[in-house]
Length: 229
Image (spheres, rainbow, N blue to C red):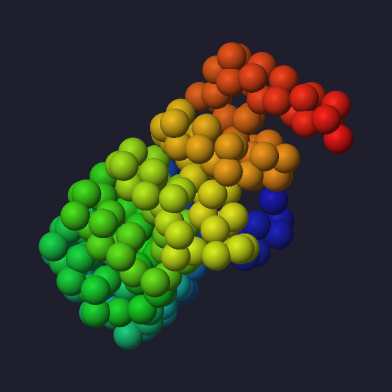
């Protein structure tokens, strides 16, 4: 306790990171001299619009990054952060579901691989944007989309069957699809059939959507292969 008191003698740091601190209290801390206090305000679930606009051009990129990832940030401020000088802040704002979709889309299409990955991670990503990610050459973006629980089933199927991806890249995409709790059964079965005995196939078999009869059929086919050998 003595160490904490020494690190935070005024209690400002504790208040900034306390989820129960009221907006009025946060507003008083938004111009605090310490970066970690302002970061706590920027990340707070109850940050008010007045505090947001105090922090949106903060000198610390850590503060702006906390604001860009905060779902309570105002849409207008998030649009402003899409033009930030730090690409980490921009990509966080692209991925934030509170950022207006049209603005995130524009920012992502004019940037690089990291921006495409950020867009692919967005919750409730519209189908047109899922397809635009699918059309990119970025395997990392494909993997991010494959892990997105809101990805369209047809998009997940296209990712699993993407013949542009070769070798290790294809396995990375399969692994990402398999990790998605919303992956359709027929897509999982397709991955199992295309890579029997592969580690990714074993992970697919452990997916909660795989029914007992598929497990039984796979076990029988494996036994038959072993006996034939």
